[in-house]
Amino acid sequence: MIIVRFAEIGLKGKNRSFFENALIKNIKACLDAHKIKYSGIEKPMGRILIKTNDPCVCLNTVFGIASFSEAVNAGFNMESAKKEVLPLIKNLSPDKSFRVTCQRLDKRFPLTSRDFDVELGAFVQENTKAKVKMKGFDVNIHAEITNNFIYLFTEKIPGLGGLPVGVEGSTLVLLEDDASLLAGLLMMKRGCRIIPVAFKTMNTDLLISYAYGTKVELNIIKTISDIDLLAKKNKSKAIVVGDLLETLKEYDIKTQVLRPLAAHTTKDIEEELNGFRQRVC
Image (tube, rainbow, N blue to C red; front, side, top):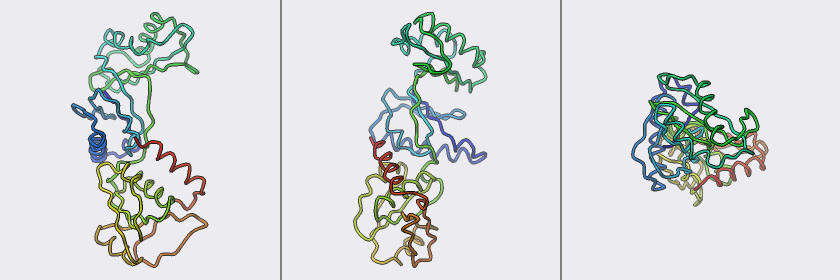
């Protein structure tokens, strides 16, 4: 089982279901693109659960995910949790340390989070002789109790955060260099579907790698005024450019121009782009 967590989506109130469904759609597109087999995706309160036996590292390229974990289903009682935790602690030895961190989302479970921590921690210590440490531990045994099950895991893989691509409408992106490439990625992180435009053929592979659930197709333009025509055709109210503070330009167009990198330096752009490139599976 893969447990997927999100951050900003949880603040969306009555529209939350729309954002969750958009994220699930993009997750399915990601799994399908990487030929990962899964038997189902569920949506309990505050989580998305993916039933699969395959590793899903590719989820670190899906906008909207705060973190995810490969977890084991440990039933819904302490005895089954103790049985299923044994493979997770097989490398714990007396010279190592650990802690147990429980998050009880499903209040039907009879023990409180603290009581769960104490009981499972005592079991782990008894079987490994490892020391309990609240800080500076070697292993953190996580338990998330949700949807009538206990899920155990030892690692949280950081996601990209932000919003699912496609929930905030579309925007054009004028591709000219690495800066404009990063500007497009940052708009995708804010939930925008991007439509790249350029005066010559540009490589859009990196954008495609993060555009699950949407299509990225490059539009070649001949003059700057073509931007207004494309914006109207695609119902886009803005175009994103890679201008920095020292490279600000004026664009003779009616379409609103957005400059998300105005406060960036060249070094900032290089570091952020490298981060995006390293995540691609």
